[in-house]
Structures are given as C-alpha cells and as structure tokens.
Image (cartoon, rainbow, N blue to C red; front, side, top):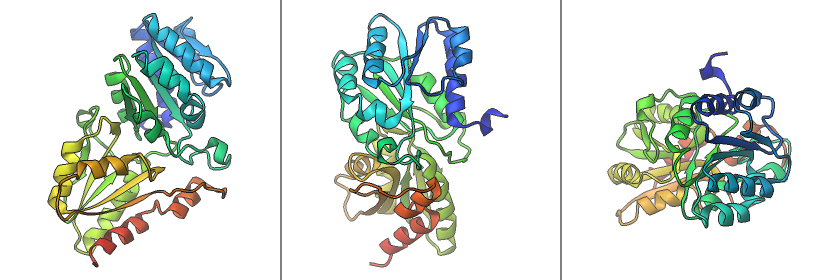
Length: 311
C-alpha cells in the first residue's frame, strides 16, 4: 500500500515511528486503540510507548508529567473521550501549567456512525480552542498530517489534531502546507467557500457545478482552525461579498465563528453555513447517510450558494 492510499490512523503510526527514531524525547500514550499499528514504534522506542487503557483523565495527566520532565508527549484515543471526558485535565495539567504536548484523536464528529452519541464529538474545536496556549489542526490527507505534526509537535503549546475517517483526496503541494495558513484551492470572484476536513471534496465538486451556472466560486481550505488565517479569509470574502462555511462541527465555536470574526467590519457581506445544528443526532447509519442528513453534500452546497444569489 502506498502512503497516499493509507488511512490517516496508519499514517499517524508511521509518523510516530519516523520521528521517534530521530527524537528520543517523543513519547506516545494511547487509550486502548491503535495498539497493533503502533507496535513498530513500541519496539523501536522502548520505554516511550504506554497503552494506559480506558482511563483518559489519567492518560492526559501522565502525558503532562512527561512534558514537565522534558518529553514531547502524544496522547491518542477517540475524540469524545480525550476532549470531553478529560477536559479538566487538559485545562489544568497542560494549559494552566504552560506545558507542550499533542492530542491526536480519531472518531470526531460522527465518524463512528454505528456507535451513537457516546462516540460522537461535534464540539472538539470549540472546547480546545477556548483554552489559552492551544492549537487546533484538522488534516485530511497524509501529507497534511505529517507536515503539520512535524511543524508543531516539539513546541511549548498543546496541539490538538482531529484525524478524520475519510479523506478529501485533493492534492495539495507540500510547500503549500504551513501551520496557520489557509490554502486557496480555487480562485473565484462571485462567492467564497470556506471549508475544512473531508468536505473539501464536496466543495470542489460543487464549485464545478456552479461554474456551469456562471457562478465562479473561490475555495479556501482551512487545515488549521487555531491559529486562524484571518487575512486570507477576509481578503477572499472582501472580494466576493458572499460566503458559505462547511464544517463537520457544531454550529457553535468552530470554523463558522472564526469566519464571522474575520469578516468583522466588512460591509454588505452575505453568508450562510452548513454545519451540525444545535441538537443531538439520534439516528444510526453510515457516514454517507449522516452527511446527507446534515446537508454535507455537493448538491446542498450548490443549493445554499444559489440561494444567496436570489435575494
């Protein structure tokens, strides 16, 4: 399997091995997931791999202790268990103590579609970016994760990586991937689509359909939620005057809020959003079915943008 074909969880494990061999300070702690995939790291880096089990508060506190004595810890488990269950430890043990570290989740939003509310996490961006001394990154291709992790893992901030189960499959040059910098995927002058994560694929497909109708869309891809590229987003929306934000996150505290702040003071802007509304998802189904339920489709992106040109 080529690296480009691997799921992001496998790329994460490969990256831990690669950096762990080069940096003796890298330590990995997991909550009973990805244990098999991380065995090469465990074998090559003895004493720096801990499968702590299902006790996420303890994992975060252990990682903070490792950071305090000079290690560069990585905590890896499912998003709701690391972000929501261990939020107090993240706040007090890492952020308040001004310690650097890395939280790498899987199963965000509704990626674990068959497991229900206990395994969904719609609000991870909002929770982590509310804390001082944090960074929030949402890579959706292997090269994005490898580059952004390499750029951030050894700094003195707490960095949260949300690894999706689905990739956007768009090719972005390595040289265009940099912490805190948005990527202009497509230039346009009629409207701006601000998108993060796997939904970039639907945004690109929608832009092609819209172009047939004479609507020239600019696509701004955001892999770093915090720090946010205000300048890029503001310049684009200032030009197009219309924008749509697409994110697999709660309507509160995510990419939409950052985009609104970026537009502060711009006159005559019109915007709309495709996100997860203020309610629980009680239905079960596939990832595709959940996306269709919430409007995460190319067709719905087209409809929402066309509405802005009608009134």
